[in-house]
Length: 358
Image (cartoon, rainbow, N blue to C red; front, side, top):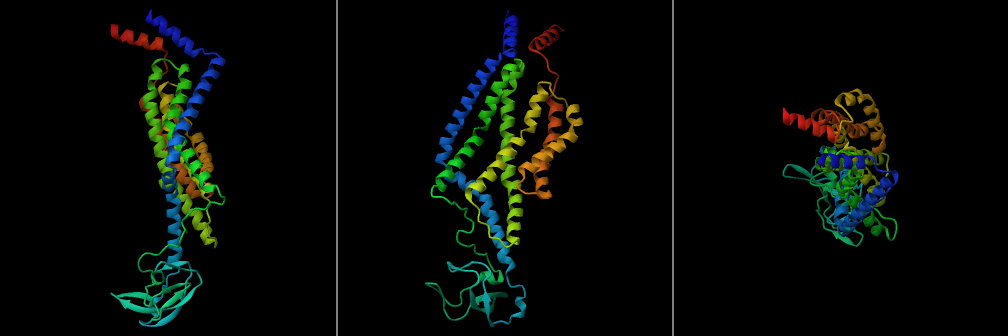
């Protein structure tokens, strides 16, 4: 009797009508929207912290580019200046001196002195008036000879909003993207729940390892985008703009569209091993099948890398494509370890029964 009941449930699950599928799809979509809505409410309360976290890579790259630009203007032939000489100096970049911003193009007289076997640049003996601020004489100008830390400008590493309600819209956008990211495990479960009626009873037990793998690989993909892929692309793009004589003025909305697309995109792409585990476990793919198709996989991965990469240079495409290619071959190993031929529940029970009798 239990076998007959299980076989009946199995047939009913595998033979759902078209309307039943539509009803199941509607229910799963409603659950997904509700999950994102709840996550959105929580994320909006912490949207400021999420903004700071997501803005860190671009701010770091802007500071890095500014330091490189300032360092390029450091006096290299300092040995040609005699100790105690007073010479005019023109600031090539906006610089901070005693908390006062000195605009690029400002010229002052500096005095060269030696202290602790190091050449220093000081203002002349007289006080120096900049706007409404008086800078005392003998104030060190570290940006001239590159001594100490190069001071960044005011707001040089801040993103820009160009509308009155831009900040509110930005926080809404940040909260929504973060909500989708945090809801990924639940969304994957809903996809599984929609597909599950078409699976055998023993195949439905794979939901826990599937969810665990999906969550871990999504986090790995987003972390790879945040720490490696995006900074590499950002460094290339900002360096190109600065070399061309442009001053980057990055709007917050455009930046967050870019970084969230890359993080979510790579998080999804990193699901290759998860999908391979599921398809191999239920017997739809084999290691031999994946190995024979590796050339087609390379082409598809190259296309995905070209879509996800915000630049057109080969280096950044390799940064995006290399982990995907590695994950594909890693997936072949996963299918080799966990894959098995697909069997129905009745075949599983018959096999278990024959083993118990043997």
